[in-house]
Image (cartoon, rainbow over all chains, first blue to last red; front, side, top):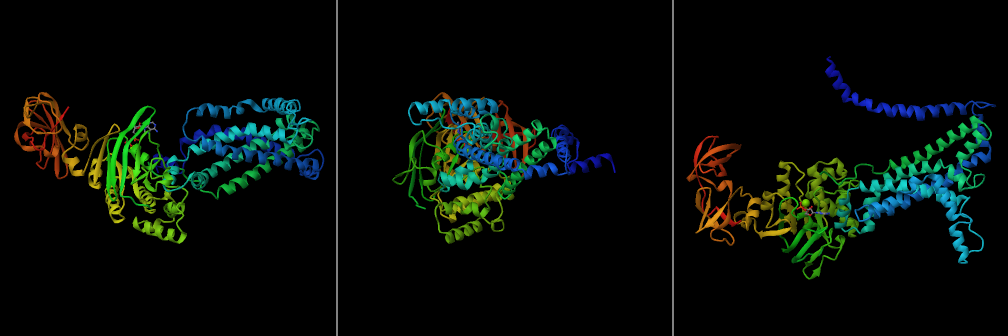
Length: 293
Length: 342
Ligand SMILES: Nc1ncnc2c1ncn2[C@@H]1O[C@H](COP(=O)(O)OP(=O)(O)O)[C@@H](O)[C@H]1O
Ligand SMILES: [Mg+2]
């Protein structure tokens, strides 16, 4: 067989020189993901005392550690859900072209650039015990003692919404723009009002994108650390799993315990994402164009 | 759906950012008519259709169904069916669901909806594909789904925006016949947008020729074909020979040629004029000496480009086997040579 024929046969199976384009990504994934993961896994399985799984046993038998899972989920799931659900009507309203769209998008997206620390500072200034909101409410006599809006669950939740919403919004907007606008027009000529057009045409085509958006904002919210400390209650109601890992590593110098917490954190995220993506696979996920042309 | 006797467009105008896309379209559509909106790309055909469907608000004018004002109603309240250029089939619904969508939106009882959907699927020969998604169909099949979806609700008016422009030549001819057949057998009233003059002439009862958003001519295919209202319509409708010259004392003068023709419109004696004639109307018997420069084989006929001894270039069609370099004598019959004001 000639070399030409061989290269054709290989190309037929997707093996050709373009495969080299994947090299940087592969190096990247190995260096930044697989290696730390494997390293963390092996550290977590070599605790200072006890058997191979002692670090995991310690985590699950100690309620103070174990409960960080539910605490984190209780913050991350509602925050991710709210971010996605709040994005949908706003993005739906903004999907067309109109004057000032760029400005409005910029305003909605600016919080991305703030970072968690700046957001936390802003939240404390605005909603803290001596913040504007409380001062205003006390001045007009609506309340006597300041409302507790920071250094608790509410503070962390708000911080996650402020930083997570722009991501969710941008993603949902781009998924929506990918849906052929003539589909809704066709539905309108067939007698569908805006509610039916949204429920029967747009939403089903958008749903897979919403699932993906949910996963991404969930992951962002699940690894919450700075805001859980800065605007939360890090030893109580917002003691999230990343705090447990941090304490294990840098307070108790229990590297196996810290790695175990990190691995458990990854496993929980993976579980939630698998469930969401599993549900997504039940949806229509094909083209969102209306036909040829 | 409620039928109508007359649908009237009264001075319909649509502007985009200050530029007129459609100016003062006035037209009366009778029940059962097949109207074609014809014109080059960008002349405002889709704009007109979208205004009619309610997908674009008007900048001026009004639309009336008998005595009901329509242009203030949203599209879902007008009861028209529309076939989109890109078909706009719902990609997540089967062929069957696509077709029954309009029926369920109108609250047609389930049993009747099922019966009418099945009937519509049969009408467009898609029985075997009823359960497929649009993405699994060929272009021609998608086109048929789009048509079935629009007509199954028995709309009082069907709007079609270049429905055949994405199909290959053979399928285009087949579907053309299919559309005309459906129009007749279902007793539809149809407004059909196209840039293809042949399609418009063969399908429509009446043609509306548009240019730059303005109506140029409204007439039967025969009227438009034989008597275009001005040189722009003539150009668009297949008068490939457009000769600039002068009109004086009943004759058209150009490049040393002096011929008799049929004046159309008001011509100024001694003023500039344009003479127009179709290639198939140029004869090979006459008194103009010419040389064949290009000859294209087109099956039964030859399409040739000839140059007269005075330097005038003309296109003609003939069944004579012409070859480049042949000397011919050509004639321009006076009843076929239209003279327009320039
Ligand atoms: N949404 C729009 N915004 C601005 N200009 C438009 C828009 N839609 C159409 N036009 C303009 O209006 C004119 C007519 O367009 P259209 O009706 O689509 O033409 P046709 O369907 O005959 O090809 C064109 O010059 C086009 O550029
Ligand atoms: Mg168009």
